[in-house]
Image (cartoon, rainbow, N blue to C red; front, side, top):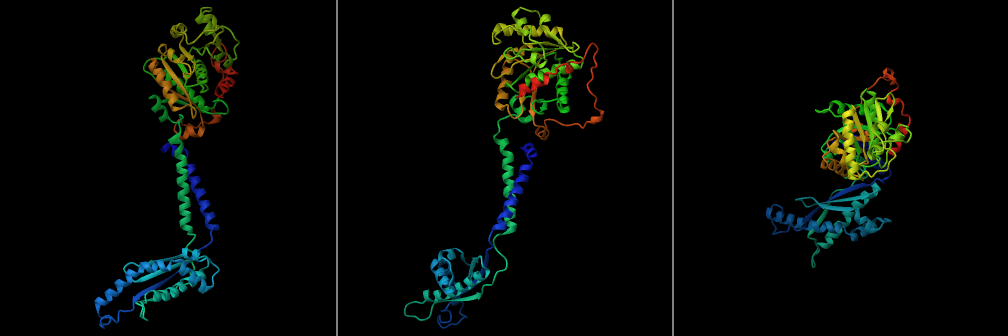
Length: 477
């Protein structure tokens, strides 16, 4: 989750800015509302006549206050009633609906006192004060009428204005500071949710943690997207060298026969196998690339070779390996293409002959790279696993599902195939960097040298395969 926030840090920031813009727009377009308040004192008119004791009689004073306090909640309802608003509208000759005015009148009883606080809100500050004062006058008269018992001319309660309303100078709405704060907080929260939602609901492989959870293995290298294909960027060259180093020195036992397969078609497994074979050959290691995807062989196109004998012909017994293999460049790289014979790769006899052939090649060549078909939808690659020293599993960033990666790893494990790790392809440059899938090392371009041929006997393999990049782009589309 922390990496997701680092990768999408701009979403909360953008949300906060959007929330600020909305808040400022609301504040700018809102009509100011003012409030004016008056306070009324509710007294018991019978205090000075109880038992003739006068105001010094503490019990009488207490009884008067208790009587008044019990009345306050009822008085609040009277003040906020539509009937009271109608009297105020009539008295002030206002062009306003009494129901609308009643909704803008708020009366409260001050706790443990006999004071009523009446607040009126209005877009016109002078009218807010006029209405508040008029409510004080109207309620004083109404309270006298309500609290005068039949047969008496003196009301039991007297209401007095103790604090007249003033013309307000500051609007209570909009509250600029509050609205801006809510806008910033709400926008940032929305941005945070949008930043975290992909982590919560995404199903594709995008982090090293996804790979570990699905396979129990590490990400060996990450190839970034460049145009339509993976491209020949310094970053991808470094990733390829990292894979090569893992195969040559990263394991206790020497690896000489490695199978490359993908979770599904289009993830770049054939591209990696081709690039890896070329890289090994360019480093001086005699390498053979075996195109074991008999359903859809790609090596002929990738290296610009003519159709001819290949793996299927060797397996069918119509050609020897020495007749079918074709050297590339100065001879350090040999390609055993798909061939011309038609074979069923799922046939047990074909799979057994292929495993035996791979073991023979391992004994006669310094390094064997096997380009195998993807594990989904065919299980051919898993069946070859027991014959190889290790398997590189290729997944595509943002497209391969985590369940698909887990199923592919489980298929290899169940077949006894030694899974070395996972290679991610087509990762966006920024996402790969932010998610910690790759690290850049600054390179002085003026000190870089062109990879001139350094091997005797002819050019290196990487300089004689002009069609290879086009084939790579075709695989990744």
